[in-house]
Each structure stands twice: as C-alpha cells, then as structure tokens.
Length: 276
Image (cartoon, rainbow, N blue to C red; front, side):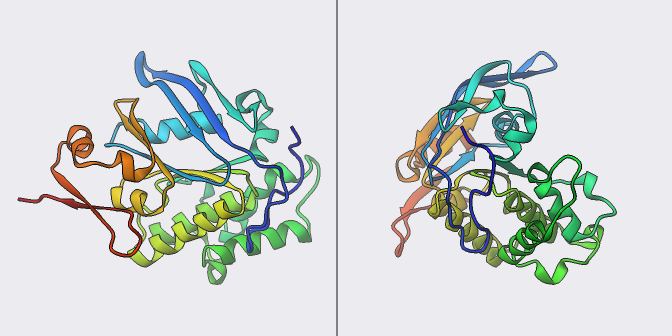
C-alpha cells in the first residue's frame, strides 16, 4: 500500500488516492485488569461517515484510540484498504489516519498556526523543515474550519469551541484518508456544530472515510451514514441510523424514554425525549 503523498486538498476535498475502507475485527482492550473494549467489529465503506454512540463510559474514545494505534490492542485487527493498519510504522500510519481529540495539553504556548502545522509532521522529512506547500495546507485547513483570523493567536487564549476547531484543522492538515473525531461538536454552539459536521461530510463526499464518537443522538442521526452503538465496551447494534435508532434501543442503552420521528425535510430520524 502506498503511504506517501497527499490524499486530498483541504479546501475542495479532492481525493487523488485509491479508495479505502476501515475493517476492524474482534478488538479487545483491558485497562488495569478490567475489560474496556470487548470484541468490537466495525466495517466502514470508503467515503462514508460513521458515528460511534453510547453512554458515558461505553468505550467510545478508547475505541478511536485503538483504531489509530495510540493504545495497544489486546486482541483483534484493524485493516485499512486491506492492509494491517496497526502493523505500519507510526509515521506511515500518521500519513493515512488522523485523530481529532477534545484536549491538546501539549499545545500550550504555541500559536494556532503552529498547532495546525504539527499535522504536517508525518509529511516533512526527519531533518527538514516545513516549506511553502506545508504552509499552504495549514492555511487551507484553518480556512476550512473558519479559523483563519485566529492563525496568529496564542492557542491558550482560545475558547473551548475555538480549540475544538483548531484540533480539527490540525487533523485535516495531515491530509488523512481516514479521519477519526472524538466528540467534535463538544463546546460548539448549534451553528458551529452544523458547520463542522457539514465540513466532515464534504470530506467524505470526496472519498475520505470518517468516524466520530458522538454524544448527541440527533447529531448522529442527522449526519452519519451508519451508527455503532456501544454499551459497556460491546457493540449492541450497528447499521443505518434509521434502522438502529429506535425507541426500544434508546430505552435499553440509555435508560430513557424516547419517540423516534422522521425529520419533515430530510426524512432522517428525529429523537424526541420524554421528559415527563
């Protein structure tokens, strides 16, 4: 599998790489002797947007870290484009897959543009520095998430929502073919949430495969092609949102009553929670 070169342009999300898909099988992971992820399977076609949902502590963030290789699996495999993703060297893997996280404590003291420039690390030679092409990718990534005006601001001075968008820009600057997002809408207002998820959809339309851990079931229903429902580290349901997100499942997994309606314009599931 070829792992060099750019997979797509940030602004227009044009892909020049061969299609790829994510296939994870029987993933297991334990922490301090306790099973956190228990035999999870995921199959995500090229150019699709998958959502991992479930209650707090279900294992959503841990699963993303297993997929990107920042946590070691106890058992199982992660295939990407038919190759063993976890067997790749870290640098080669970083040219294929990017993880946008909620927190970036290591970014303290950096300007926003320098934080995003860290996404270019896998593409820059070990003894080289960034060039004009790298700087342009960073500028395009910041423009894509609406943060161009903040480029020279200290990262420490940003709000939580602004930091979230910078984290996504950093991931986009890696020019990945597989984009993983951990709670990408956390701290964002409604308009910013819709804008960010529309951006992710634009990337998948060009062939990028994306998977996001989400808390908001209506956000998952509105944007994801498919959903994986985790509960206590296990997959309890997976498939198209319209098939998976039922009142019965929501009651079983989340312990709340809900009616699943249909959005009047999109036809996608619309979840109304019973607050009585």
